[in-house]
Image (cartoon, rainbow, N blue to C red; front, side, top):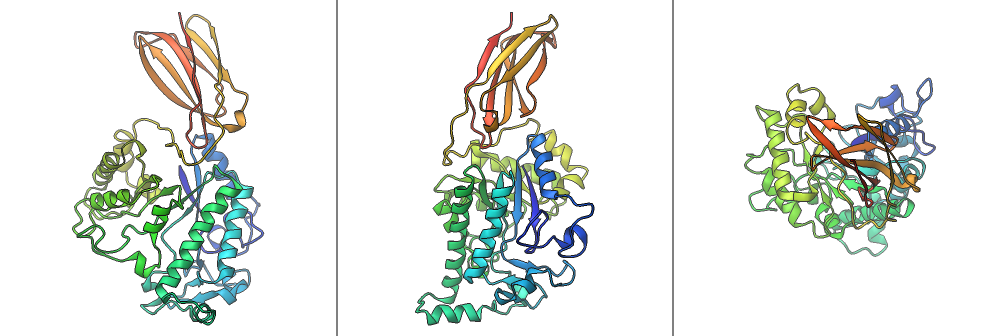
Length: 418
């Protein structure tokens, strides 16, 4: 999957009637690209052509980043100034406790899910901002906190903040699946829930600083995949990669996908390719048949000349299907029909199915001298000439099966080759 950042700061790298075009696309908030095009539509089409999922990444609460140009009249920091606060580092943040904030972000998410053929919505680790963003001062939500107390609220301020985020996460999860059941919801929270979990772990507490009870979301199953940002080396003393991944796995009581986030671009080690490869190996050992990982960021793969060959010739030497999400109920795929025409040196192979709209990929199986080989093919590939002889071995059989958007497989149809 490719995870594409489409909403850095209450803006849009896609066509939106709710929020302005992003500064990061055109250099000015609210200015459309010229000639006009839709980057998200392009990314979806190009990803799906290659058999890749396209996940869209949104920051739910950040209203303006200091590297995002000036705050102009089109910026949501101005247009919704009644629910936005300015932090001491110059950033603007939506008040997560304000119902208008929750409704606004909910509308943004539902709009994207409804109009675009995406595979997942992705939130990262920014809920309430890190303390350094406000130079150590408390988050300025006095107005909504006072309103809560005046309405008879009894929670502590910290619990009240967490409760607002918890309700929001649950709401987004349910609304996504109500709109399109096959679209998943993923979160990549900070890698440490609280210091001391597990024993020996030290560092920031997202529970206390970001008011993000990420453990609860995982325990409740309010996500389809969870990618704690385990951005430290394996031998890091207070943030051991293996210990943290084991702990998150022990909290995965609803058996959602748990795919760790790896700091591929700047992990502090002298040999990044070997470190990342070893982290993948540890992940596979712990996660077994549901192994996977997210690389932060694409630059870690494309700008380190040793990284791509280390992964492509190592753990990523073969293509793989997306692991199934059995808690999402779907209509089973029909078995495809296989047609073979033998022209001597090749078996001309075609296939089709009645419910092509439900298919995402195909798996073609070929058997040479009793040994099966597999090939994952994109949706628009509906035929292939299969060599009758390969490396001195004779083709005995061909089979095909269909794969849906959630990695579910149809039954296969097979034919012998004589």
